[in-house]
Length: 194
Image (cartoon, rainbow, N blue to C red):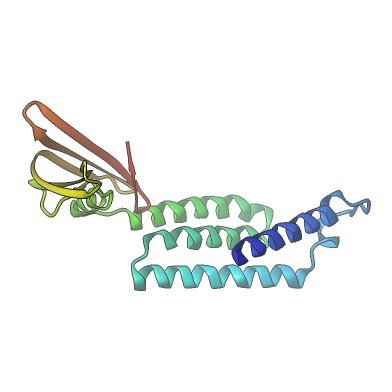
């Protein structure tokens, strides 16, 4: 209930700020009359804090998704800094190269990464690349939950690393003439199934 109240207060504050700055009758000549330089400096310092804490926490606690707020904060810092017209092209190119390098840094290079991804989805637990355990839960007629574990051989397993992306594929034999193919690709450390 408290979280809902906080969300409502934040939403109302955002609406009031937007209305005052954009839709009010006072038309300003430029954003320099609307935005205070000290508040912009505070925002940039806050972005530095977010980037630093996210990067450090990502490495210390091995939480992969923390790289995304760090990347967004760094892009915000690059956008907020003053630049000359000639520097804009160089800065855009440097930002693109930086983003590609960060993406490449978080892409796994070892084939066990796809096995961990398959195991984290819940249906299969794969410790090795030659067999997996399929875990299923069935509700019996007595309203009891029965869990069954079945060892299934892996017919084919491939993993390829391409610098800024990686792909993985696994074919699991579920029985005679039945196979399940699991495929995924990794961008910046995040596996996406397809």
